[in-house]
Length: 244
Ligand code: ATP
Image 1 (cartoon, rainbow, N blue to C red):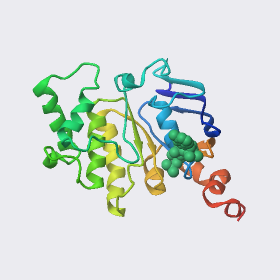
Image 2 (image 1 turned 30 degrees about the vertical axis):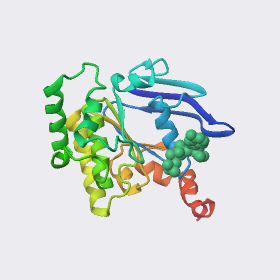
Image 3 (image 1 turned 30 degrees about the horizontal axis):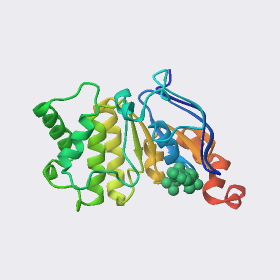
Image 4 (image 1 turned 45 degrees about the horizontal axis):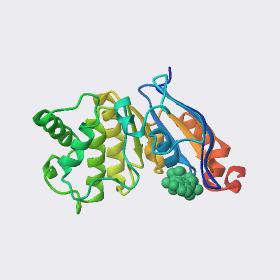
C-alpha cells in the first residue's frame, strides 16, 4: 500500500487553476522527487498534502486513511512534517525554542527536560547545536533551513516533505545535501517527498520522480525515464529542444 496516495486533486485560486487533476503515489521508504518549471503547482500540492489548502476536488490518503478529515494542526500527529521554500520560523525565538515547537506537535507530548534533550540531540545531528540559544533572526539562510529540518525531525514523521532544500546552497553543499538526505532516510526511517529545482540533486537521490507543468502531471518514472521523456524536455526547454 502506498504511504501517500493523491487522487485527482484540483485546487483553484479564484480563476487560476494551480493544480489540475493530479494523482501520484508515494511508496514507503522511497525518496520521491516532485519537479516542474516555476508555477507548475509543486508548492500548492505540498500545501494541499499538509492541509494548509483544502483541495476543490479529489482524494488524499495517508496510510490508507483520508487526510481530508484531519484538521491542519493534526497533520504532524498523523506523521507528516515539512520544511518551507522560504523558511517559516518564529524569528524572535531561539533555535531551540523553534525546534521545541516541532516536539510539541507529537502524539505523545514530551515533558520539560526530555523534550529539550531530544531537541539537543537533533540539533547536534543536523549540525547546529552551537547556535541552540541564539535567536533565529540574523542567522544565515543555510542555518535557518537546518532549523526547519530539525523542527520537522523532532516531530518524528513517517513522511518528510522538503520544499527546495538546496535553495541558496553552493555546489559543494548541494552534493553533501544529497548524501545527507539519504542518511536521514536511513537514520529516521523516513519516506521523503522532495520539491527541488536543482536537477543534479533530484536525479541523484530520487528513486521515482513526478513532473508537473501548468498544474498538470505530465510524466512519472525513474530519473532516467523522466530525463528522456519528450514532454519533460519540452516543459523545461521549449518545444524546439524536444524536437532537436
Ligand atoms: P515555484 O517553483 O516557482 O515555487 P510551484 O511549482 O511551487 O512554483 P505554485 O507556487 O504551487 O508553483 O503555484 C502554482 C500556480 O498557482 C501559480 O500560477 C501561482 O501563481 C498560483 N498560486 C499559488 N498559490 C496561490 C495563492 N495563494 N493565490 C493565488 N494564486 C496562487
